[in-house]
Image (cartoon, rainbow, N blue to C red; front, top):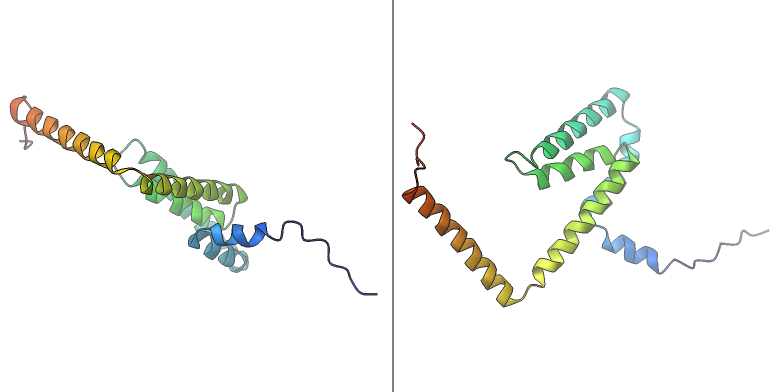
Length: 139
């Protein structure tokens, strides 16, 4: 008796979802099976590094630093081991893609107003530094 394949109602959605995934997510999916075969000590080191980067990135949200670069790297490392990190990484990458599309869809007027606002903010900071009592060089 031949096995019958179940109906493929969602088969049209699967290729679109695969194409929609960022390159890093596809690479992590491929690496996940190889990662599970690694020695326990190596896997624990991955977890320690991932949590260190994630906590450092969360600290960079209020401290100086590239939080929006470090947090996804930490989540990417942790996603090799934990499903919750994979979900957070997927959502973060989706939101980043939405933000990129919105930024690309801005009008010329919006870009001009943004440039004017940045120039005025820089001029106000410079005026405050020169006219106020703010030392330019700490001595």
